[in-house]
Length: 420
Length: 163
Image 1 (tube, helix red, strand yellow):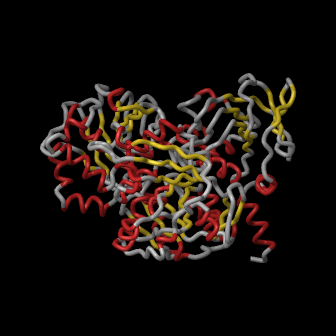
Image 2 (cartoon, helix red, strand yellow):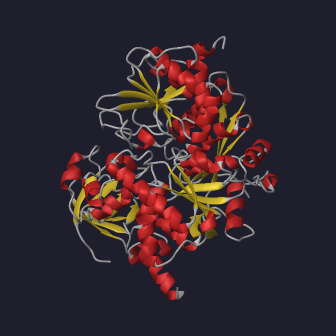
Image 3 (tube, chains in turn brown, cyan):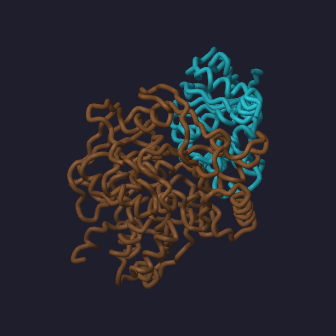
């Protein structure tokens, strides 16, 4: 069996499963946030007349309406906090974006079967967990019963050979995969990222790959656990358990295998209005910009902030450029501050925004205005998602975003790294 | 299920959840969100779609976010359902959980504005020129839609279990 099949079989209480079978699985953990969580599930639980199936297996994280600086958002946060108290669930309030906070607090471990009330839930796959996003009604069903049906997915192997050159990051890998496979290439099956270039990535870089399995249209985006995975989980206060067993069998059948060469990959940029509308940075170089946004679970983790600061250090923003930085979690921001990274952004003239989803999800007051041209480290550049329908968003790595903020137009980060 | 008829709204590939449920209306009441469904992609739909109408689209309908308001907005507008060449997985599950009929099938060659009826039981789209076969749903998903979605379905199940 593949890794995905092994986890689903275990969660379904079966010795083995085959792709295409529909099984009912027991959920190890359910993650919800303030937008799709309490305000949406509580009326359903009330109507059903039931409570939570297991409050110790529910984690609530506020991130969409943080900091609650408008009346509607503040009311949603207040409802969220009240619900957390009444149900006694683990609640991380204002600590950052759910996909980053969940593993950072040790909730995710290899082999787990997890539902998340958000489409970027495949991020948990970076830890060798089968984690996928569902809507609020389906989440209410999970909270009531602890169960969910799933069609056992085929596994699509995305295999990265070779080694990434300097200046190229996991974000460039996943954008290249979006370009090659398209936004439905994942066919709602399970992706497994493999190969030496994947194994060489740190945990937060792996999270970037798994996170954007959503943009490939996959249900999950797994990376088999290695020693580095177990070390991360332990350091976060979690229990990696018998992590080494969560590997696909050597001869397991995969539906598709796509091979990529890391060594020849250039920095990638996706043009409006699709993450699959992607090419080498050279294709878009020189495109004038108004805003550079370093934010979101995809693009503002510690590793992303660190990469951007590597290029920004000692530089100022180009005239007319507004740089907004929304660190993905408070912990990552604190660590970045301790390492002098936050002061690099401040010295360069950046605006620091709350540890929240913010404009990546089209929320909050910093949304892009009419005709604004923005380069963003986030996952999605759909028309109107980050603001006005006339705004345009390009997607890139944090390296490319930083270089572009200095030049005032889309720029290749590699010359900026020479001698650094 | 009762048969209703309405006009086809034809849309392309990759209709995303931000278009169906724009972020800037996500904190607003459902009626307001639904009134702005597809406002950026098809202002005509947002202004003029009526109960009984249906959407016919290309590949990967509902890609993007897990926000089920994307499906709920269509249900709120009273649409018969969506026929698309393929659906994004989370949207597909959300639609069924909310009792919105969604069927995989090819119908984008039918003219925009044509009258049509989605027959969920028979898995066909009836139109003036004939019928179009759609991929049948597995029985348990059809049962979910017949019950009106996951919540009424669970109500039945919990009652049966005596909870």
